[in-house]
Image (cartoon, rainbow, N blue to C red; front, side, top):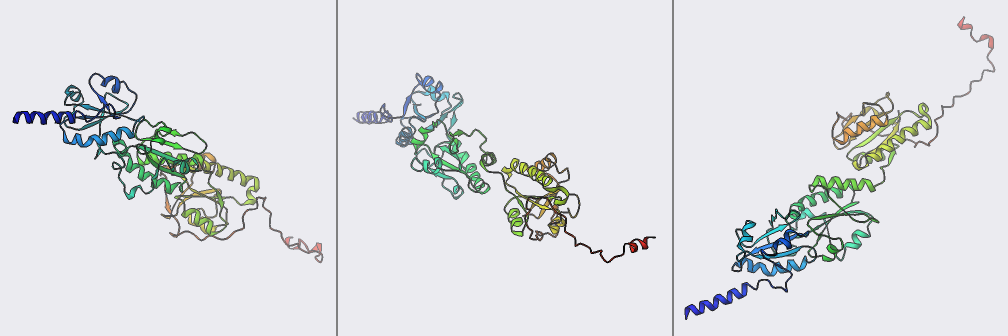
Length: 413
């Protein structure tokens, strides 16, 4: 009798666990006979659970795995292998415990182990920390308004909560978002879409793997980001996008203290050119210098430096503080107002010479010296250049009507 009861219990148990997944589920049953064709020869990304029917953890995972399969339908293939029944298949992939989830990506012969902390769907696999404050969460409902109708550039990560690569990217993406927001004044935005919860978006943009990063610019089709996934890689690409879309920086004449201080304090570096006096070059000569400066300002605009110029002698205290002081025009210096240090152009004041100077600065090279006095020099208020040639000062006429011409030159004899 006892044996009969045990047999009935056993039969009932086997009937239940063998019903973990059925043909009506979106989880695809995989066996040694169909695994190669379905998974190995497929171009799709596969998530495959290796389970044992008697495994309690597997039974608890079952409803969640079904949810994952439904959420990712038409995006990622989700399968299950009864590794207790098909031990050869489990052994082929080194399955030693249950449940084991493996990710079959681009290289189907080298699947990756899923390293997530939990197997449930939804947002549980994605940490919610203050470090993500500058990553904008996008959904099916707010995507078009935020991204497609925006004048800004958007870098959008499509992720899945269970994706190990997504988890690795998350802190880099969050750190990059903060830096990019600061350096581009919010003109380039980093965002994230949970593709499992926002299937309309994932389907619209053909998302087939995670994480996928796409770049959106108004009036253009989205393009894939195929760069590195470190903070510096992401920031570098964002700044390139910013500079491609940003106007060249303004080249401002130093005519008052506000212009000089604001430009230098709001930028990592401010480039200051001291041009010859207008009487030495005329308008044509000065404009040729300004054209070179504008060209190079545009070339280095992704560095987001400030650009200033002044006429020789107009800002004597600034010149003295930079060691220019009264000779050697035209001249150029780069000021770091935060550190009160500067670097001086020692090569020729030409496009090639200035470019070499700026290139060294962009790599953090070149000798520097403290700004004279240790503080930002006093700036005098000047009238802006009117764009015209300079004029010599008008001298008073001398009245010689009452001078005897014979008297002139007597002292020279």
